[in-house]
Amino acid sequence: MTIWSRAGGPSARRRKIALWALCGALPILSVGYQIVAKETAQAMGHMPFGLAWLGHLIRSPWAQGLLLLEIASFATWMTALSEMKLSAAFPMSAVSYVLIVVASWTLFGETATLAQVLGGATILAGIWMIGRSDPEAPDAG
Image (tube, rainbow, N blue to C red; front, top):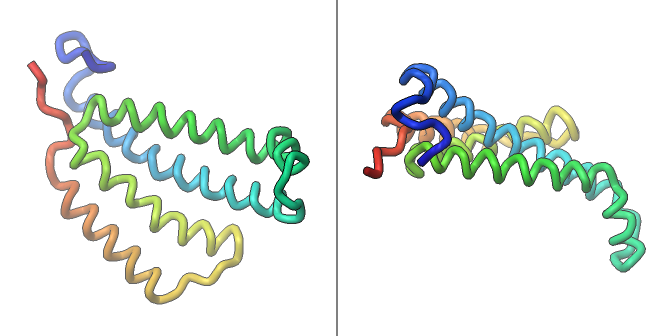
């Protein structure tokens, strides 16, 4: 049984919107994770690796944010996979590659190269072509 029983769950339209919302949450959570990971690395970069480093990491709000984002990402991914075909859900995770370039440029002042821009456009075109199918998993029974 999935999170929405076919018999008593939401309408087909609402269900499809919810599934695509799940897919949209995945790259956003992934980008959030990478932003927080970068902040964690910058906060921890001055310390040599060792027990003091580990103690500082455990107390770091950035590292705690990483853990929360990882749990949220895992729960979202498991929900998406329980409701969708893998071939429809997985390509949406590739959107995060494009969003990471945008986030690194806007938040960290990193330069976006022409190759990254063209690669991002190629990724988005590929996702569009792959995603033109029905995202719902077929009934198992």
